[in-house]
Image 1 (cartoon, helix red, strand yellow):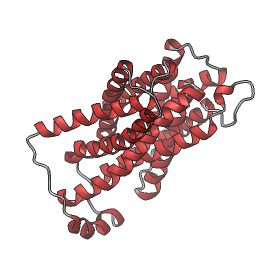
Image 2: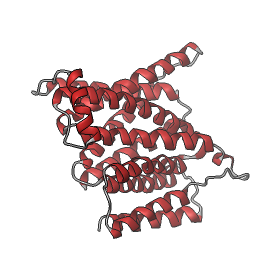
Image 3: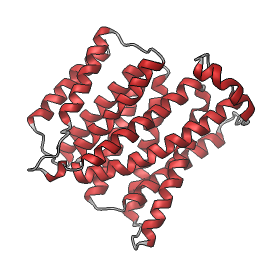
Length: 308
């Protein structure tokens, strides 16, 4: 369970740093790109210093093993075939990660950090449904009630309709896109963990962050052509975001090895919502409505039930 706590702490820290960058009106794409540069450099250095050699890529072996492993759910890919699987899910995950980080920053500006932090975690319904129907990861009765309460708390925190007296809640389209890309990004991590061994964890993360870096760098270059600049503050913020962003993914994948998916995602999401809401209240003086206070109490009960 300690991996989930560390993932919560890392994700909440990253979101609150992004809130700071939006308050300062920093270059959104530059911060995102520098974040991925930092994460990719750390991963490259870690893999280079590792004593384990990288396994070769075997495309033919991958096609031979795909049906029994993925369709038949029989074990995991061999090292050579796993490298192909890592490239496939890693590139898809990198695209989701990059889009998710951009829309987190966009939603923070439009909706505030508390609503954004909660709605980004509503995407847990995507991998959770896949886990229930594909791999039969069924929770216990108490855990089921905890999961249901966590979902109810998430929905209570997030208004699904724009409010006429609060323009900050009008970015419903941004929230929906954030929900989709965040959920699919989490599911890519689960697909890696399900069909590859833990030894390739760092390689998977490197593929994810390198893909996200490539996409983000493209849009950063377009903003520079439009006259935007990259400041020293953008560089510092990007580096500060990169470390917790990397650690969030690392700790989540580690948590999958010891805790059911049906528990990892609700625990992680509820914890991040609580910490981000608390940070928004204390650090940025965001106002909490009564329903949000009620939802936080529900989250605490849900966490207790899901740990029972």
